[in-house]
Image 1 (tube, rainbow, N blue to C red):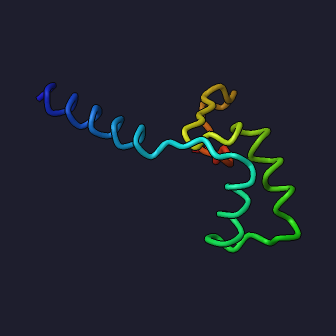
Image 2 (image 1 turned 90 degrees about the vertical axis):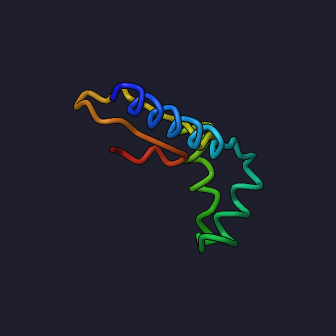
Length: 79
């Protein structure tokens, strides 16, 4: 039973690691506008937010919230 749980956890870790990416500001801006429909007029604000929250790292996690929640990803979405 323990080996099955360990296998599942390790498998999930590998998938997350493979998907992790660090963007540069220009590439992220282009992807957000072209693929996800973000406003060109507001893209500078979104890029500044991502830089401050996650340093452009998709795998960024902040688990130091006072209420026990954690923040994940580029935009640090709360759990």
